[in-house]
Image (cartoon, rainbow, N blue to C red):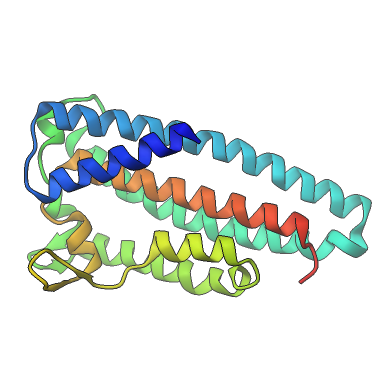
Amino acid sequence: MKKHLYIFFTISLLFTITACNFFNNQTTEAFDTIELNVEADTVDKSKEIEALMKTITDSAMANPAVYASAYNHMNEFHTKSERLLTELQHVRGLINDQVGESGDFEKMDEDTDQLLFNGDQPSENGARFIKAIQNYNLTASDQLFFFPEAEKMAQNAFTIEDVTNRDGENVEWLTYNFKGFPAIASKTKIAIMENDVKNVESTFLKALIEKPQF
């Protein structure tokens, strides 16, 4: 819990710094550290999900009358999660192709606008990114509806509605979160989204174990 709170408050502070257009080597290094911490937590969540899926699978084999439906829902939701993760990893790969993965902080300070935008509009990759989130929201909602905690987590993490900026103007989600930001900030945001996917799935599976028939 302390680790999660540390990550949350540090990310909030650093995103406030980037919103104010203040960036230096220390901030870049801090983002790099946060990204690594979030990735480590994502690995832990992946292991937790594997264990939860095994529990449901074993339960379905032992008591199919109760858990067969839960087993099917588990696999269906896992597929939806993996599809979104694949698209998030695609964006991460685009950024890595531009700036590399070597920890070159000077390159990490470059923006990656050309990857996700054509001028003020989303590029092909930007539109693909948005579509992936929209598809996840649409297809996962029917299952999440029955589990309010997981549903709320997904709604908070993957809303792509316009955002009101500091000047009171409505800004498209992709622009507000990625346009003009240094590569390391964008990579960190992608890492957080990957972590959110895992957290939603873990919460969903735990609830599914408790309520296998719904």
